[in-house]
Picture (cartoon, rainbow, N blue to C red):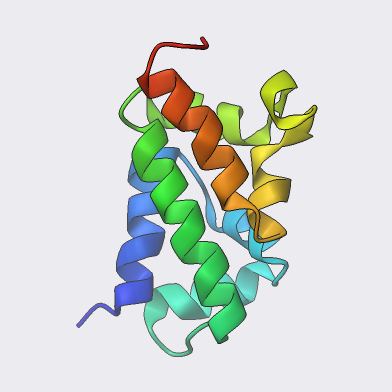
Length: 112
């Protein structure tokens, strides 16, 4: 039986083109830890669960506009609308709301 965290990790791979190493870097854990989450043998700490949940929500929103490969690139690119920050860094710092504001502007076709 797959855990909820394993399902989220699968979704991040399918919709966001993210690998375990990407999730490890964003959550500031080792790739081996992400592998254990995927197998269901361990679970993330609450703060890390928030980061992963925020990442999943951002990826879900981006997948409405981009392919998985484009989504991954978008997350790792610096953006003028994010004060030249990268979305992955903001998500790691608990600032996913700033990333989501930019994505909402994509939805409104305000920015491209």
